[in-house]
Image 1 (cartoon, rainbow, N blue to C red):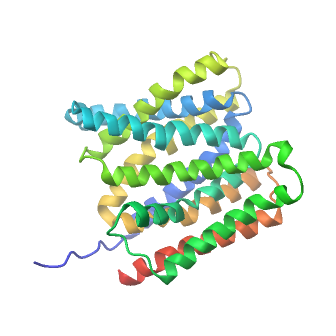
Image 2 (cartoon, one colour; image 1 turned 120 degrees about the vertical axis):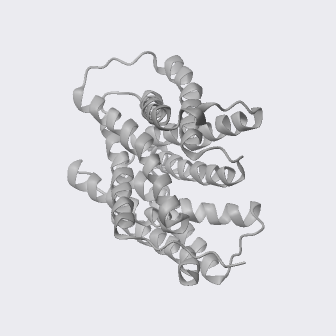
Length: 303
């Protein structure tokens, strides 16, 4: 038996990776703009619903047979992951971005690989963790403390800033738990699986949004366009590019996007929305990215 040879990323793979990092980094900014007009659960439900419609349309045109999912186990996984990957984290982010800069939310997404590493070590016995990965996890949590603790020490807990920051971190944790469950999910075609998760997230969150916030009034063009962008590009169609990239260059290469998304989130938030970030936020971002890079160093050297 010959040993599997890792895929070698081509220039087009790097182009797709950079494009995805830009799209996902800008998603936090677009949510902040949408929240100028709409309320949090409406933004979250709208983003998921628009993404579901866009991706369902693509799958219906390209691979309609994949949408015929009837196995109860498959449907349970789709519903659970629709809540964990979309409904819950999008709600947490929409609520949190009202109280912290969108760039901060983007930085917290950089912690996802650290959470995934910890969860994989606990729940996936095949995963190996050595000194570099332990150091990387430690650095990641030090970075989290640097992001969150300054307001606690300054006595600003009552203002809601700390709780909002914790909500953003909790959203990253939701994505990480979802990633572990996806690994254990049945072999459902990936595009149909993603479209199903988006649809399940929409079904789960829309009644809550309507009950708590009522029907939205579409009056602000800027906020509406931002919501449409957030739903179609980073929530819906970007997942198709993600599938293409994983199949052509491999999942390890795809994980590099976690290093770049926070940088785009900071750049776009500061330049386009005039957001002001504290010095501790930049320090925390640097520590988190260093920790994530350290956890991946062993795998990259092995490749």
